[in-house]
Image 1 (cartoon, helix red, strand yellow):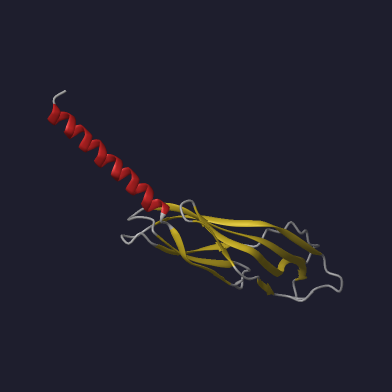
Image 2 (cartoon, rainbow, N blue to C red):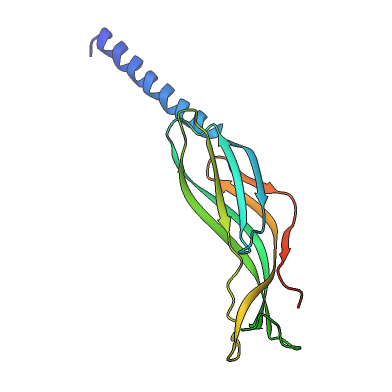
Length: 163
């Protein structure tokens, strides 16, 4: 191989290596600018809001919100009242929600995900139906593969019915 061709190959490989390292460096710079939550809303859902930067232009990624949740369900009669000794069920466990988001030209994503209470298996007698009486979310976090995980401080709770 002549000297000019060898120099051209070395220069081309060097350029490709620089591009590869630049792509890795951009991905490594991903980070959360903000992560917070609001709610629970009237349906017991927790809204997790976030902003991620450093993703690179038009990069699509998966973001996941997660929490530990405890929900209390109770049997309410069709008149909107609870029997003196209502059937109740407490359900606890991890809840999560994921979505695919695409960064804009500035390499940022600003979006929200919704966490829902764990579902009930409460079986109510005839003339009654299960309602969500209260819900509590703890250990809230949001994560993205390149930005890692960001904890959200606080406990988020709502009581719908005192039973």
